[in-house]
Amino acid sequence: MLVLTRRVEEKIQIGDNIVVSVLSVEGGVVKIGIDAPREVSILRMEVLEQIKNENIDAAAKEVADITEAADLFKKKLSKE
Image (cartoon, rainbow, N blue to C red):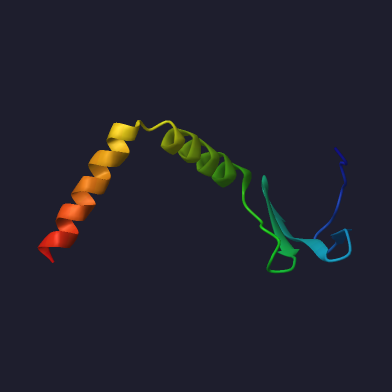
């Protein structure tokens, strides 16, 4: 891990097309800005972990649960 010290309005560049800027520092909170191409996914780590855990839970569902959900969906469509 590379550890850098930056002041407000200072920047770092990652690769050819990602720039991270320090916008403000207030107490124990650092506000950063990230300039990156739209195709680059930027997620907070806690959000990424939540998505990962939800995907693991969804993959662990039993086939019966999925079949039951599909049946309910079919019943709802047939009523409309």
